[in-house]
Amino acid sequence: MDRRIAGAIFFGLAALPLAFAQTQTPAPADTLVFELPGDQWFEGPLQRVTVSSDGNLALFHASAGAHGHRDVRLYSLKTGKEDHFTLIYDLSHIDNAVFYGRADLARHGERASEQGWFVPNGDSEHLSSLPSDAIPIFANNTSELAYYRSDAPSQAVFINAHDQFRDYEVSGRVLAMAFSPDGDYFYDLLLEPSGESSIVRINVNTGAGRVVAKHLDGATQPDRIAISPDGRKMYLALATDATPVNEERHKPDADRWLKIFELDLATGERRIIVESPGQDNNDPSIVGNFLYWTRTVFEQSVVLVSSSGGKAKEIVSSGMVPMWSPDSHRIGYSFGAARLADWGLDLDDAVVALDDQANPASQPAIIVSGYHEDFPPAWSPDGAWIAFHSHRSPKPVPLYDDAASTDDIYLRKADDIHAPEIRLTDFGLETGPAYWSPDGKKLLFTSQDRNGQPGIDKLHVLTMDLELGRALKAEMLPLPHEIRSVDWAAWSPDGEKIAIEDNRGDDDRTLWTVHSDGSHAEKLLDYKCTTYCGLDWAPDGKTIVYSALAGDHPQLFVIPYFGGAARQLSQDSAGLFHPRISPDGKWIACTRIVQSKQVWRRPLP
Image (cartoon, rainbow, N blue to C red; front, side, top):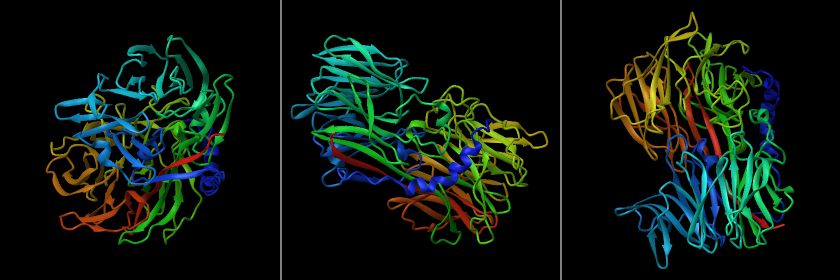
């Protein structure tokens, strides 16, 4: 485990609330055009926004995320209302869309027996010859288009000019594409395995290409680039004006938020024109003489709600996914920034002490730190050990899915941050938090099958030998076929049963209980939620608390284990996720998230 950054993380942890409070005041010319509140967890910041060439509409593209589900929505920037009819129109299903011309749409979905990309053709649409996995972009005059294939084994861009397609191999993952205003040039932003980005320009008429800029410190997720009306400047999102330093990517307090840069395409010079501390600014677009961009608002905290219901009180800012110590006087949690430039790399774990009234009684202290993502520490029933999920890597990797990282469950002595981290598994994929059985002999967690269906989470159990600090046996719990995908699971207090949050697809969830061997599934209720929402048992084993969508945000609910009506416990103005009931049964700790996507505008410099 690398401990060189632990001190910097500790001081950054205390400073994070101040970073949100000191958000930069927008320049006088900046205008907030539209804001869409979010109701998800990590998926929210990954949402992308595209503004139409006439500035009247915006497409909001949700990330596929761990569930593999994509979502696209169309909003009017004039009325602020969603326009679902225009988006779907005659399609029975839609899963992607891009703007075609000033405000028309090319859409990917199903219409009767046809499936693929439907492109405007006069007053109607026709099924295009684009591959089904194509991610296209159209020039403003719609006579030219380019695309890359999301499922292709090797990366290439395909450009159609004058009814002739040419393909160009590229050295990296395509993050963004744009045509010059006159259509003579095509630009693509590429992410290289090193974590650096580069911009390549291709002459559409001759096919000649050259690198315009390299060693860029940009987003590691799909983004947008925009070209000025005169074709001389590019607008793109970068974290810094230097080559990225991988060590910095793993620091929760690093000032690496995306800013909008203006890049001179002739000289390569670039300067910051939009920034706001503690928030990402990206997805730039040009509409006439205005620059549009997206700002991400994302604030998370660990809060407590009385087990009988009521108002939430904040315990610590910047935290998520809380875990209780056995004595109910400490809460462990994960913390880090949702920075798009370092996605998923900067999460570490901290712990805060509570007094008898469940008020903070200490400053946050680091309990788990190192390279890559750490999920919160789960204390063994005797308090001697912690188990946690981690993507631990031996070096500061540049990307979330870097081959040098892991995705597994680890074990460590609880009170010694320098104790060895013992890797218990070697098969994880999008692994969830670990939970101890009440007798301390087993660990329960979710993970996807590397050879199975993407986005489907399975339930796993480790049988532990704590004398030797190792797992004796790992097994996938056989569940009835009625249970589709396990988003979250928790042991009953007697260890005889397991409660399961089952993802039925889209926003549909089902709450089940099964015996500890996976048999005898009993359905408690169906409900709606938009992410991994979470659940837990009350210490007396009589009720289960869970998070479910209530209006615009997930809230806390409780339902009797033997069946009956669910009761809402919270009515917070933000989303409440990942409930965990204290061992003494008095409090429910949970993640509170305030998030939105904002569309901003200012005159071009």
